[in-house]
Image (cartoon, rainbow, N blue to C red):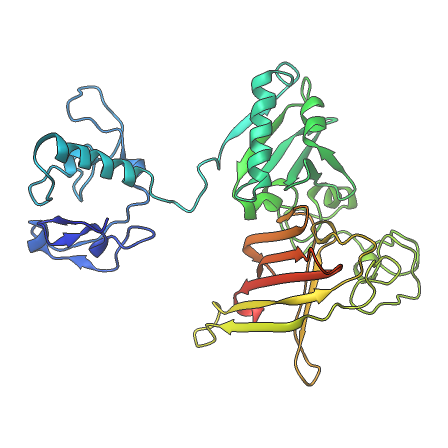
Length: 386
């Protein structure tokens, strides 16, 4: 991409800037040998134009290359005299290399997205099905894609979103979590399940909560609210019977009428009842100039937490509070456990390209020398992270 190929004076990246391969200007008509200047096309979708064959009388695929589609392949496009390649086989080899590179241009969407597999009573124990589902969950465990499942269970249409690193699916009912194996083996006549690889940030919306109001689709149907309307939510319940509605309860599943709390999670269900102060914090706020909406946040430092009970941010989540010197709140975000988290023997990571309340990445690592000492880095973006 950096070699001077066009008339031995211009490199590919002169016009096709990385990472999309697109440019924001017009190429002179003189340089193109055309009657008018033409906008620089992007390269990351060039793979969609493949399949055209001018030598075939039956070919009906592809769109061709160039503004007028006059070249059927990248290789033939690169055979124009304006491009400088070695003569003979060596030049053709370089053209093939460049063709291969362009076909691998990043699209910002993982190539596995869109992969689907329907499991039913006939194929649920086939080795190919078992292996394919294992491959799907393994890829979802890395966080680069999400995985959802849709189908009928007990005659009712249900949805599931895979919880990365757990081997389980959260259903569209908050109280139901099932393993990938159970979901596969539970299929039968009229109860097929279709597994689909999706972009990571869309898994919850596609799988379990279409209006993203925090209530699963099935829970909403059971409660009489509309799962497609974020303004329609189930009536507030009182799961633990302590007289405080769940949305207001600092421990919704633990009887706690006193609501004793020091950090946002009630002491009755909080293994760590006091905030852990970040020592030697390094806070950077970026892109604060107008226009707003692209601000960034980076925070790093260390904190000491109790060694028992065992810390598990991937399951319980993390609450981040930033306060000014006068005590005013700058940021107060609770990133829930589950989706986006990966647990390792001595560390935890959270990644969410779309951001949860502006938080896109959390990395926490235990010290091997000092019990309870954690090193952490938190990153965020958009105006909500200011």
